[in-house]
Image (cartoon, rainbow, N blue to C red; front, side):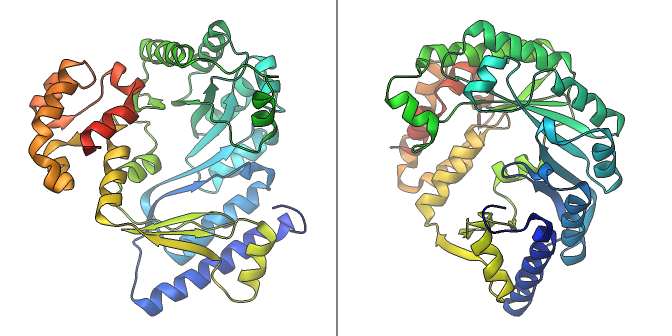
Length: 361
């Protein structure tokens, strides 16, 4: 929650925020259908008690309702949960838990400033399975000093746990962080683009061999275990509302975001204000860019007719762009002939460049 905030009050404050939002929606004639997915993330939610996470889900259920087949996920730090905790989540209606594994190599975890030990992750994954929860583990590659052998070890350790879902993200170093300063001063070596490409290719091969199919550039799952919450976000075909400090909401072309500082967020709610810090309305061009950028990253790909419509006056050259992408091996030819843009493995490594070409930049 941050300095000056009481974590014990968090579920009650979140419930108060939900009531304020629901009241505003009712006054403006805006309604949301029962939630088909609920995702609790942003840091380490499992620092809170299981009953507090259950209370948050109950808030959504009482305010907007839950669909019969709702998917309810929480992120979790392996060090902050045990078997009774995970069983309590399952009893409260949670269906998935995503563990921040990051790496199986102690030196890499130290570089990432993670506190858990590698041996803890298989134990919590097993406990989650025993509780009847679907399981996912998140990995990070490209840490300063991480070798290809280190990365292989992490992948093999993740596969050995047999989770339902595995995510693998390239490390992004945020400006102003401790690691950012260390890299700038030359204290930590950053991997080359070729090194990161080799690690991605290794991940895709090992995960495919183990029965995991890629369905978004950074996400692989066993058949039927894709994260529905993420899929809804990538499709951009539904509204969602975010609750909590720094949460983002999406209402068509409108984007809203909450106050980030937990204490300021709580104070606004306690004074009867919806804690929206800012908002923007995306123009047609910005919306098109967002739709294309997200869809191109997925296994489902992007409908070429939809792309032609989004490009508007630039659509006349789309056929040539698609032909060039086929010729350079960046999109799958059979999918393109069937009317969809789907990236090849090489295309996934150059996804931003493919997106730029498709948008006519």
